[in-house]
Image 1: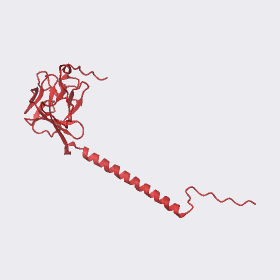
Image 2: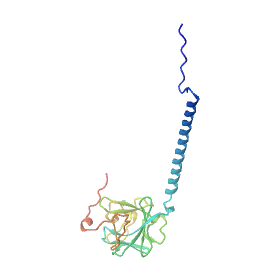
Image 3: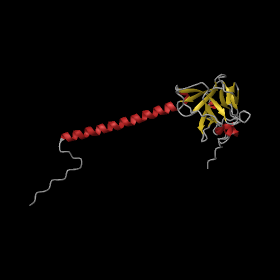
Image 4: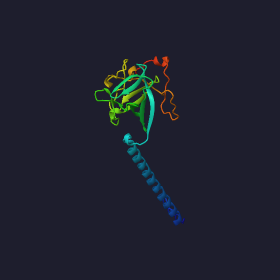
Length: 216
């Protein structure tokens, strides 16, 4: 008579107590690692949400001084208190405040200290206080090396000037119009080693740049 075979040991059966202790220690370490990872992810998300919720709360702002060359007038944007036009000479300097995140900018005249703002009617006006959303613009870099500035509050409304240098209403502007195309130029005699913006030299060739083709 053959002896009975020993019953099969279930999966996970350990032959000694030491192996069981080692396995439990590994499981505990893995569990703690997962908890720490989840906590780190949660803390990181909390940091991002709180520090990007309102860019105005950020203390790190980049300030640059440059000229804004208008494609239609061949001159520079200037802020004369409440009035703004694109008939300025080489002395028309702008102070541009750029937030740490994104391309949101506030533009004010270096001499007048008034900001370029757009009201609910699309009218371009100068204001001494630029903290409102109406005074924030978003830079859009175009294919023809020009830059457009669209209102951060009124979507699709651009900063623009006609051939006489007068401001256009935002509701009558589109990105493809030459009236909203600008070039950022470095003031003469000014050298900034920490230059953030891309300055483009204005020549006869660039002034004859083709209009943007409408996207399909």
